[in-house]
Length: 186
Image (cartoon, rainbow, N blue to C red; front, side, top):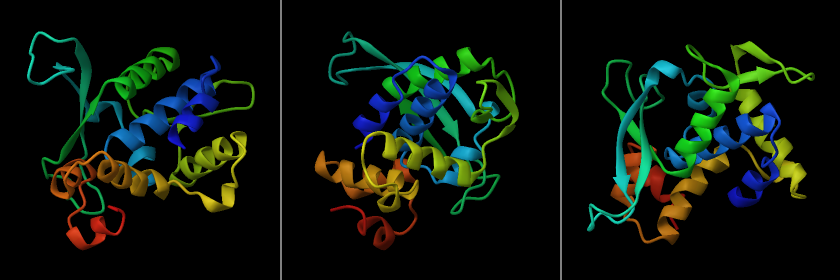
């Protein structure tokens, strides 16, 4: 489903670039909550050394990597050192968004008016949900059956499908409770 959503935002309009970066970053960073995506600020990003495609071969091709310092979330305090990594395609999408939008400080994901102009204010958590629902409708699915929380649940479900252990997936999703995380990890 995420692949179809990303394809639905493959256009060159500013809104397409933003939505593509938002969806990929929210999912790949462990399925961030919509409030975390809406509140993400440029100051939370830190460039990291590129990561080899094949960890066993340090000379293999490299993927771009960003660290997202989470700050205060539902399960962490503001002074916690919680962070997650974003690697590869989501990093490229996020960098394209930052370049095209000319965001140099503050909120990363911002509203775009109907004429395609970037607004100064950050998206709201509800806006993140509405963006997802709009893209869901664009690919012919029922928006009532989806919400932004599906990115969080979908991250853990996909981790399970790929054979990633639950504790390893929880490092990225930042779930504190094995019981809660295991509800999505099938």
